[in-house]
Structure formats: C-alpha cells, structure tokens
Length: 380
Image (cartoon, rainbow, N blue to C red):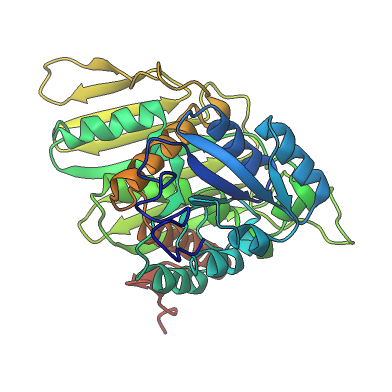
C-alpha cells in the first residue's frame, strides 16, 4: 500500500487508518492450511477484516474463500495483492521456501507484515530480511505464536517474577504426530522447509532464548534422523528426507543450557509438549495441552499449581490453543498504538539459526560453535 496523500486509505489521518476504531484490513498470502487458520482467527476478531487473499493454486484460493465466509478478492499472484490501496496489513503464510521472495516484495510496501514461522529457510535469507526491515516504519512481526499459548505464557509470567532465582536449564519435549499433508506435499523435503529443526522447532528455540533472557546461543549439539515417517512415500521418484526425531542441546552465552527432545511418531502420549525450567530456587513445569503451571520451590515451602491464563475472551481456539487469536489481537494493538512488534525479525532470525546449527551438527557429526549469526567451521 502506498500512501500518496493525507486522504489516501492508509494515511494516519484517514478514517480507515490502522489507528482508527474501524477493523484493520488484512490481505492473506498463502491460503493453505495455516493461511486458512489465520483467516478463521481474523474472522472471529471484530477488530479485523479480511479483504483479499492470494495463492497461485486455485483449490487453495477456494479454501480461503470458504474460511473467510464472506466475499473476498482473490489473486493468483501475491504482487497483485500487495499493489492494492485498501489494505493495512498482510499475513504471509505461503510455503517456507517462498518466504524470502514474498517478504522482499512485502517489505517494499508500507503495510504491516506478519510472516508465519520460520522467518526464512536459511540464515542468509533471514539476514537479508533483517536488513530490508531495519528502516521500515511499518510493523514487521514473526509468527512464533507458541509463546502466547496459555500454559506457556503463564510459565513465562512466573519466570518473570523471579521465583526460579537464576535460570540454569530449560528442557522442552515435543512428542507428536507426523507432518500433515500440505499442498503439493512441499513439507516432505528439507530444501523446501529448511529441515524439521527449522520448520517445526523454531518455536522451541524461540522459547529457549526467551527463558534464557534473550541471551545469545553459542554452541549447539544434536543427534537425530529419519526412522519411521514418510519412508514409503515417493514424489517424482524421490523419498522424503525430513527428520522425524532428534535431541538438541543449546548453550547460551549467559550459562543457560537448553535441551529439546523431539519425536514425530509419538502421538499416543498424554501431552504433546512438556516444558521445564530449572533455576537455583525453583522448577517450573508446563504442558500443552494443560491448564496449570506447576511451581516447585527448593526451600520446602511446598509446590503449588498456578492456573493458566484465562482464555475467556478467546472466541476461537484453533490449532494452537488460542495462541494465534491472541497473537493477532496483540499485533493489532501494536499496529494501532504505533508500538514495535512483540515478536521481532531478530527473534525469527535466532530461532532459524539454532535450527540450522542443529542440522549442521547432525549432518557433520560435530559440536557447532556460533559466532554471532555465523556458524563456525569445524576445528582442525
């Protein structure tokens, strides 16, 4: 959207500007499973209105129309959507490997941008996006919505009280179902996803870094492979190459250590995710699904359970326990108030970097050292 005069639709003085009480007008690029999830969340938000959608696949556009439940303009090319003058914000939910290209076009506008995780599939593309976003006045937000899940958000709230003392360790277990079917099964190949530890686990590396107080990851160790899932599938004669299980350890420059335990053939468990944070003074435990956070002090004062944040005002739970709904509400709040994004391009970059380093550790059978955003070569 280009602002050409004080009376144009996107200008601060316009009656339909993002800061007005009128709904924020969204375009959604990519109307597969996650794009339609965003559309459905937005339909349930009175502060939002889905005006246009874009996807090169006609069947996906039809899904988007159905999710919107009302007439929307549909485009086969995302550039046609971005050229409109009646939008305030855009959601990018296209396949991972298209993010870098779509973002280059979106960041050249003055639209607020929410891009689904992962930010991009490579560190190089993430750095390019960071450079392009640096001078924008418009909001640029990365969709790492797990931090808004009720139990995880409550765990982070408790951590912020200082109840744990000095944080020392964070462990995250995800035992879940295999990757779902996507349009064209693009998510069956590392070249399209960035790899399982980027595509799926950037959420968890983001949470590790949050728990570590925003510290910088400096060392990554990992072991993983493809043992069960998708081995009998063929696409143009190719067998999927995505990992289905892994252990990853991340060391941060402030001494915090993080561990990830991932299995994507373990859907029979009680919980899909379990998060534990251990400090000098206490341990915090949260599960997804769940409705409480367990606080276990070391001083024998007695463990207790803290109710998870109420979701009474979340009118659509969706795939992620209401977190996408909360994410959009906070995105809109930041857009209207002129505040910076709560989930930044840098957050997206670091979460991808840790996943890339973990894949490198597995592929090369070594500990991977990081120097800022650079993965260092193996020691000789």
